[in-house]
Length: 349
Image (cartoon, rainbow, N blue to C red; front, side, top):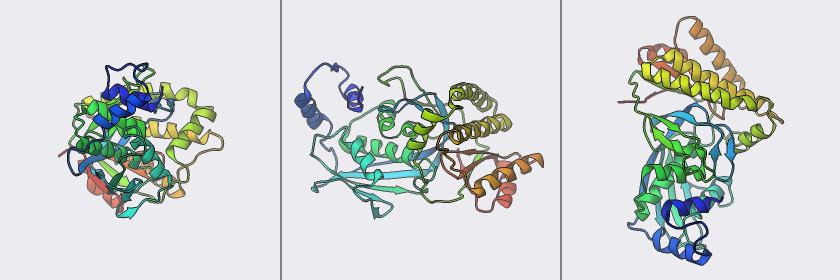
């Protein structure tokens, strides 16, 4: 199945995949999807930090994950995207005030995503993206980017899509984007259907006002290998990957229990173990993938030393060298004293 088939199922659920020919499909796209209802579309999407990671796809075309995953949104960190039609014969993408090179991977991924909706060679967009976090540095910038783009298109063209449908569509651009439509804790369901229509995210009802996340940015430089490429290499070559789904299944149960009773040791232990296991699968790939820098490892050891000394702080690490600390509000001053560069994020008002 192709991504365009999923788009058809979202917008024209009564039309079978064996229905109208390509010309009719393109006409339907023109009539239904690409007529703006206002001058600009605008949307914000928060970045999300996975406590139980998404690592590995059962379908690379549709970005269907091998396992479910669980994340928490950073409500004030993410992407604000503005979109509008313009007369230029190509899309124009502005990221934090700078035009993105048309042939770059960033521009190509965006163009391929937009081509799922618009008529062929018609209706190009001016896209202005403002992100208040490092891009391509393991802080889920693609997640909030594609989620905000999807929501901005929904606003511009007045598609009136339910959030679950937007979660499915954003997943076609970046898997973890499916989780970036809500504040708080979110679970992305792996699903079992080959068309991916049961693969979407849902918000969880838990709130934990005392829980804090600390962004410990080791470097804001772009990583040497993309998450997408590293993920596929891991699935293809890691001798440890076969154990990953079982690990995730256990961790999801533990994380839900931790959220229910608000137990930081349970939550932090599961999140930290899950992250280290994911990176272990990368290290056992060939060629090996290692995102950690010496400063990353030093920070890990410092966190373990602090826990042994009685300070309850944990970390998680995505596909990049930067860490996210997990701790309670009462320990904020101690964490800041130990990590002066940390940015403390309030998850719930």
